[in-house]
Image (tube, rainbow, N blue to C red; front, side, top):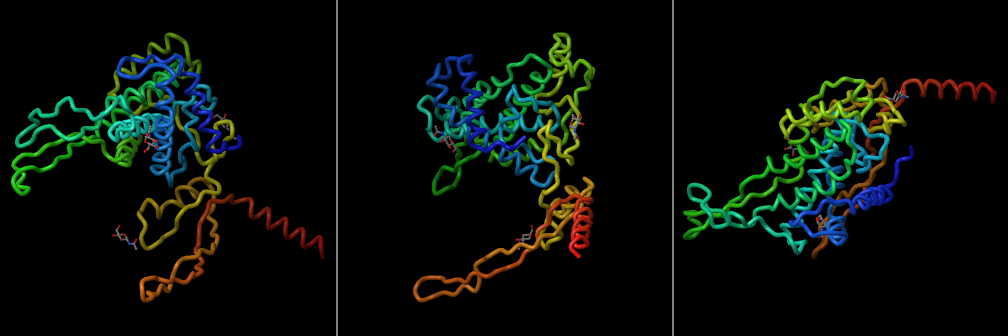
Length: 358
Ligand SMILES: *[C@@H]1O[C@H](CO)[C@@H](O)[C@H](O)[C@H]1NC(C)=O
Ligand SMILES: *[C@@H]1O[C@H](CO)[C@@H](O)[C@H](O)[C@H]1NC(C)=O
Ligand SMILES: *[C@@H]1O[C@H](CO)[C@@H](O)[C@H](O)[C@H]1NC(C)=O
């Protein structure tokens, strides 16, 4: 499968959402109909992209490093599976949409939504009262449900698991929220504070979900039933099991495939060609181990490529007031995973070619 380019993918994603727009259950809290769809669609798209971006950051130096786009969420995607990794994709996407929409709301981007002022003026605790602009997460949550959950139109066990993970993503936003306060009183004496609840940076939500990913729980189901997918009995059993698991935990049904290996039918690229990092002065243990993890553990070798980079250097200050720099060429070593056998074959081929020429 050729990787789709980003804009084509987004169009597909939107198309998918668009098809669902007519089937939305729209409650009073939101605007109804196509107007609502158009109002939020762009922000939903931005939010879903933020989710995938954060996924890529969290998994940058891992064998599996996230899908290129939001397509895996589409119910009509043949690559759909319910692994530990897809549980993360679902959670981070649902969270991304909720986070972005809530931010939009706080920023006043939508006419029908503003700060959560339900507690303003009420005492909060010793020395503080509710005030300021609390993020209206209920709004973002609702939109995320309507757009992201609507993609699960199936009635199989996977749909139940995906919906649970979407919800876990949204709960992550709530769990990581914290109180921010401002001091009042004579010359900042802080005799009284006003406080409000605000969402954590999305990065922090990503860290939290990554931790949940590490502890994700596998639902042990009858394998035949899972494969069959939509038998009613099976769904009942799955729903029952899913309900017994805390909402904040990620869950999955299937073991992960081998992410070392390219597998087109599963849409996996494998780790061949991935860049990794060798010992450097200032690298985390995680980065320092990246070549071993991505290449060696996958039966690949590490190849070094020298690349020229140009940087500013020998900068001089000129009176007055400019700084002039020279461009300096620097050769840096980059490392990539490569097949073990291929090089030998090529060398062999070259030798043979040489022999032929002589
Ligand atoms: C919502 O926020 C995102 C990200 O900041 C922005 O790209 C988008 O345009 C905003 N939506 C609206 C309707 O302003
Ligand atoms: C790709 O994955 C499928 C499903 O797990 C498996 O049956 C198949 O053998 C894999 N193909 C390769 C080339 O590994
Ligand atoms: C190296 O890492 C330390 C600790 O993480 C950091 O404080 C320092 O700024 C880094 N130095 C460079 C050159 O990146």
